[in-house]
Length: 530
Image (cartoon, rainbow, N blue to C red; front, side, top):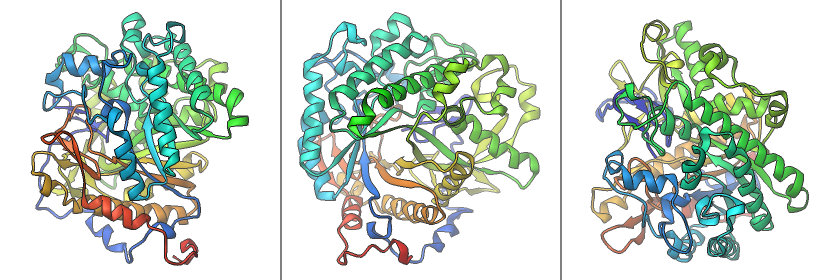
């Protein structure tokens, strides 16, 4: 799940962006590595509060494949990956992906064997509504697929945790009015959401309106490495069109209004009798001041506002963070009073995707002299992964992921303080393996086990300090298509062998998670004993 932009060194955050420093040092001890030494005992699910949900996830485009069958129309990611293979690291696409569309039953058997409480997946908008709009007709085979998937999960004791939109916008809406660049999208998204609530809401009790909207705005419109691949020509990112100074903010504005519209519909028409909950998933990093200077301390906070607060602030308080209003100025759209009221409190929970931290250093003086105006420079921040030659955390296969498990606790406490301690699901957390190794080697994923263990430990510490975390979803259950990284890496606890008819092979982390989730020998819950 990476965004990469060599020109501006913009770095991805799981699916998102900060500054990419292609540092590959593996010999230096991380500044934060000693944090792991605080972990004094193994934990399992019994250490967490009763009712805490453990799961894993994937997304429609990354897993389903079968992009042109059973009535599905192309999404912007189908178009992007097929028309611009040079923007995917291995030139691949998700036309087949891992064929979850046909193999979901065998995958659900593996989920049941693992002991998952819940499975997080997304619905493909163009699979349900090939014309993008309700008025264009519903695809009955698409409805049948998701009904079958949901029913199969429930029959195996697994709760569906469903995202309405994980980046695969119907291409027809992009062609008609520019997709999320147009306010017309708000009604169409609302109609799509309404149909999903009506059709599947009798069985789906956790809804996410959209996954990583900040990834969409940055990757798709600031640096052009995600669909639809728009950015300013001055960035040299081979973008055919775009404006990195304005479009990320326009798109985010329409994403926010689409989210709020869907939430309003759900709460007014469905929540009362369906008894579910609804939220949004935002990806972020934890930003650590590069130095102890007051400027860098403020800079870390500013970067959190530009990345996380960009969406979290409006849906909590009905307005953008003050620092964004000041630094972006007239390029940042305004909410009407009605829109602000609709946005305010428009979630029952926040979904958080957390992978890694970065150092933040003030760059106000150098940015003010820059000829380039874009989202990437507006925050006046320089991000990095190393300080004094040492990495910020344990190095991994990907140059933007350095494991720093304590960051998840720090960020949870930050949300508790700044956003009124909302209910939270960790909707993604994990680490990637390289896929250019033999299957047997790829299945020995000790680093992923370490990642899960230590992040869960610090998450539990946050819970004990009063953070309202309700669940944890590993990314991902299966190795799947990883956006601009294609199939060069795999985040899954199940290996998918593209050389052997997409056969599934559980990794060591699969068996670790299975052991972690196994019912305790004693019925007593150990949460209060830690």
